[in-house]
Length: 118
Image (cartoon, rainbow, N blue to C red):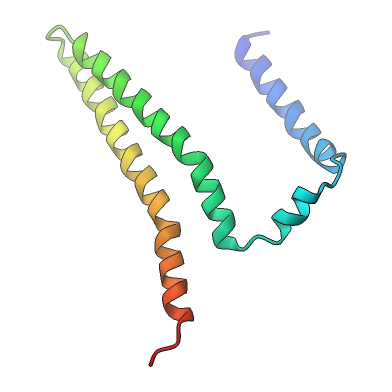
């Protein structure tokens, strides 16, 4: 069996077992605290957790594109690949920044509508 088939099979089995594992979890006081979170607090927690991961992946994308640019050796095909890698890294970084800013903009809009106008 090829490695890809093994990975797909393992992913499929784990995805089937995940609901049973989630139901077997013991409810703790932390889960009560999570249920009382507002949407803005939950989004803030998730973005503060995922932000370093996104920045790390962005750094990896730029490192890969830099290595591709270094190893071009006047080959036009490899130059196009390096430019595509750099462009994808830039697009990913802009998308990550936009994703991080959207909750802040929504929070500001909700706060602006919640305050009464004089």
